[in-house]
Image (cartoon, rainbow, N blue to C red; front, top):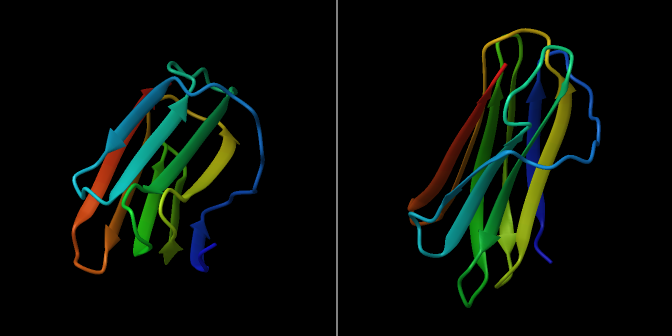
Length: 130
């Protein structure tokens, strides 16, 4: 298993785990060695409802890959950033997810980007509306 260095910058947030079905999913494979997935749900968010988001990075190559990544969550009232780096074995993945309550109407967006040492990146972006 790879080793990871992760930095989390959060504005007025707390870690909360909540099971939910993701309504919106986007996948990026611009770098043929890594696939990234951005997810957010529910599809239409009501103020006061829990918004669940996650980002996943998968090494789809046949050898270990050292990567760096960043994940951004933006809402009308809060922005969060997760970033780090590490090495993934062939077929190994890394997922980070969060949950928070929607406090205002507007766009809720998740962006995931990961790149290898060569600089080639894969990215995905998804959003839902409150």
